Length: 277
Image (cartoon, rainbow, N blue to C red; front, side):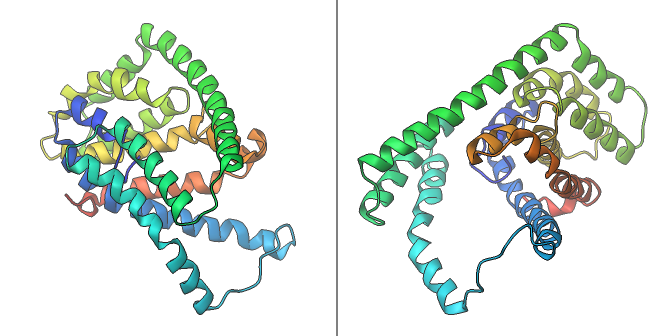
């Protein structure tokens, strides 16, 4: 959602009236920072489990083995290049670029790795249908719940309230992102982008020092945090479905990773210069 291609930034560009290309560029460094924080969280999550014997690590691999594995996997770089090239070149829309990515992945699997036949295709389709069914069930529930609350004007009132409190710059940012972090626990991302955010945009003009591109990047990071936070947590449950893991077990193991995303968001709120474009 932060590192392009990102449908989120295309929608935010329209809502905030900023250049989508600037949002794409601005999301790269925050995406790397968030990834680094999540890697640190993964390290501190797994170490106690290894010591208690809950997880057994594989043998240590030499640098020669790692280099060999990297070289063998290197052709997969054509996948993001194909997606980004078709987008930046103006050849495809984001949805069409997803199709390009799928086609290129099939070509690499078939002609480079030579491990993709009818059995693998059948397994891929089956797993995709199962994951998509679980995701769409969650989306239907989230959108229905979000529409009901939207008709009650709850997101709009919360946004207007935060914008009319006369807060200082950082207090305003923390309030806005806190409100949307809370809303993200219950609403689908599309509800936040298209229903809850637009009423807030005029209040951003009260703070001329707010850079709308940087605001959009941090806003999307907050939306990401809400998307992995119960009770809605559509990304969290989707990941559990894709991994074949229990939903409640996944929720129990997720707090440290939520803290990592929140820490990245707070860092970017107070040091917006890290968001380059």
